[in-house]
Length: 254
Ligand SMILES: [Ca+2]
Image (cartoon, rainbow, N blue to C red; front, side, top):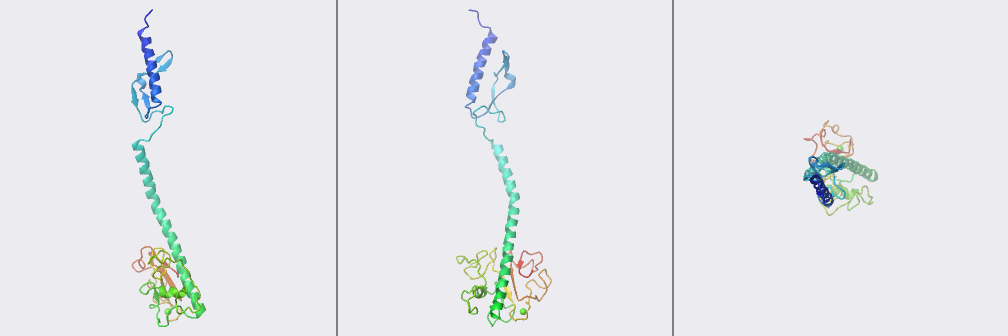
């Protein structure tokens, strides 16, 4: 038998080796790439004969699972964190604007209810012993439950016909629930502080004092109103250093 030339025997061994590597690679967890410099041509076909090297960016073999690297996951997490950071202030601003809209609606309803009471009874829902507008201020200093008992026909002495002039949602499990009547009987704004109401107790068709002072963004003093209501806003404080201009308060008369 004529001995097989060494280069041909070497080529057959390398073909078998390449077949083994391809078969093994189908079950390997990582991509196997063959160093191109170690391949050679046999009978016009490319024979893979090089040393195997792991390469994350190499093309996956059939049936192989492509996994994310730690760096790729970290990049995705950082991008998500940046997007969330950008979206949160926008979301917070929209939410606060919705609360201001609700507060504006609530103070308008309170004023409408007090005026309706006046139309019905010819007087405001306050005790006859209260004779100044400053004394007829409820929700700040004086608890507003005495006023809302009358307006809600809930135990008041003046609303003798038990007419319901206003009916906000109620949550008596909390002292100051947001946007509801609490266990203290007061009507709380969406940030949790009680709405403040001032009524023309001396019946001169104007209210004195203006809670923000004259010409501080909330009109003159006295105000030509029978009843006013306001919310302290998100900062839970009256005005911006006492002035309405630049504050987050919500008022009924503008
Ligand atoms: Ca007055």
